[in-house]
Amino acid sequence: MYAVQPSCPDPTSSDGWEYYLQLPHDPRAPGIARTTVRAILVAHGLRELVDTAALLTSELATNAYRYAQGPASLRLNWEPRRLRVTVRDNNPELPAALAPDPDADGGRGLFLLDLFSDRCGGYALGEEPFGLCGKLMWFELAAR
Image (cartoon, rainbow, N blue to C red; front, top):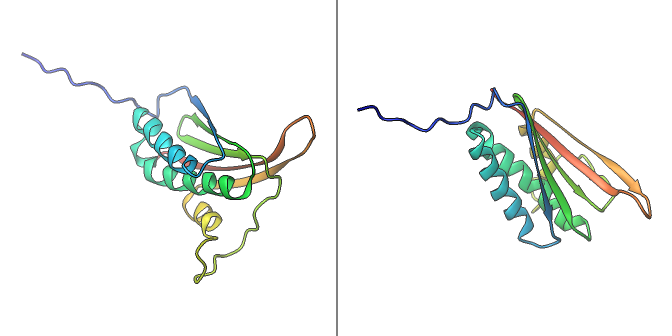
């Protein structure tokens, strides 16, 4: 008798995928974003990226909730060996890239992004009355 074990997805052989989640302006949104990222990465066999991606996603989603007045969106994009996570919100003001104050209660999100991601950045989308407005913040993690 042979036992057949389910095969885990091989993240290095994937042609790529993308997931998109609309986040309401709600204090629970960062937790939902974090949980969603964890579930997606585990389902695709990318367990090595789960903790870092969840932490950094939570930072970006928290900033979107705190500094924007409307909904945000979360996008995960996988190309073989690289994950890109983006969070878009409706506030066009980019955060100041400062070193965190060790006595402050906050302000460590960008520091963590820079420290733990392979690449990160952001850009303003403008303030168009009938088009895209706000900003897009992103980070990338490479699979080892």
